[in-house]
Length: 218
Image (tube, rainbow, N blue to C red; front, side):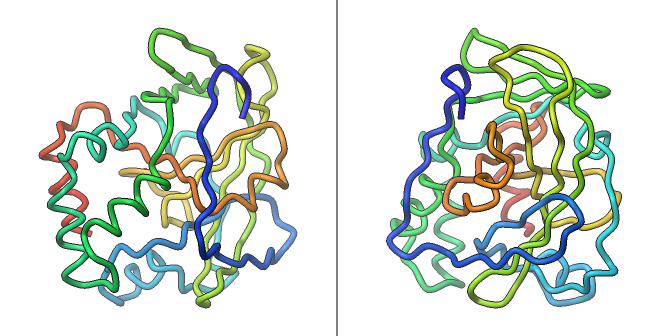
């Protein structure tokens, strides 16, 4: 990450193993559990799909004003989500909180996508760039599920804005995102290997309680 919009990355004790498949261009899913039902759409959400289901997407799928959920984790607002995960998962609520603290951690608290422009807000500092599609990548995780990262390359804008951004939102074809994980930096290939830190963004007009409700619905 560049020095203006630095995102803190951490290594997990057990890192997910990735196998990069396909040559089509870019997007990767994350390996954290959301507990969706396994109907057709739920299976895609959980990372089970065929290559021919993956379709190109435009930046407009992520159009809007987005807020980081990390502050809500830090202040305890997301504690009910961690408790719910503990009921259905293999970790305690505290362990899930630690896991998501690593995943959500970022100092970019707001992102605005409008047309081809993406603006990154870090406190009172803002950098922005114009981005165009750079394809997608399909990633295979250690446990057998997969993800798609939709990648966009900077064509103009501030030097401090990242050269590449990669969206992962559990969607593999054109559809408006309701939240997403974003990876950014200047090395396209290196970003594909980042699976422990996935800053996550929800619409800026949602409050903490509404975000909790959205997460529990998943």
